[in-house]
Structure formats: C-alpha cells, structure tokens
Amino acid sequence: MSRTPQEIFQSYVYAGAMTRNADALAECFTEDGILEAPLMPAGAAFPQRLVGREEIRTAMAAYYARSEAKADRPPNVEKSAYVLHTTADPDVFIAEIDTVFDGDEGQEDRAVSLVQIVRVRDGRIARLRDYFAPDLMS
Image (cartoon, rainbow, N blue to C red; front, side, top):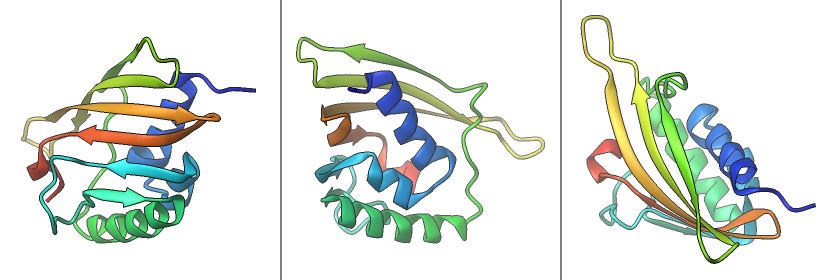
C-alpha cells in the first residue's frame, strides 16, 4: 500500500525535528535516497549532501549528537504550521514550513521558514532538498 505525501512528510518530521532519531530518519529514505541542503556552505555542521540511507543515518546521528550538546529544543508543534503542495508529478510534493521554537523566559519565540522539495519512490523519500537559511544550523 502506497503512503500519501502527508504520511511520508509526517514520519520524516517526527523522526528528524521532533525526536532527532537518526535511525528512524534514515528509514524514511530509499536505500539510495539523497538528503540535500543546497544552501549550506561546504564544511558546515549540517551536511550539505548525503547519499544513501547509511550515510544519512551516520551523518545525522553525528549532527544530532553535536547539536544536543548545545541544548537545542524541538519545535513547538502548536505554534508551527506547514502546507503540502502536490505537483503534476505524483511522486513529487513541496512542503512549505513555518517552524516556531519557544523563546527562553523573557525572550520572543524564534520563527523559521523553509521549503522542502520531496521526490518519493515506493512510499519512501528518494530525494529531499531542504532550503533554509544556513545560519539556522550553525
């Protein structure tokens, strides 16, 4: 049974942004899946391009371990929102995302907007291009 763009997107977000589970995140991808952040400069903490489920698993586990040390927190689901756009190609959808992170006491919330272009195959992500401001991941 084929999964819908909504199901694929929700499992990806839960595995990555919400639980930071590199194993679950990698399983969202096809064996040869590609995760790209084209706006990231070479050598940045967040990987610019990962090819294959195992490279995604390994690199994202390392990234999550580094960022946990900085006391990153998950997004506030109630304040965040997204819209999925289907395309003429049934294997491609676009996610328009507005993520909100709660501010510390006395500070304003931090809003982050981004766009993801997702190509799927057999109910998994074959290629995900994640467009966000690079300074958000430093």
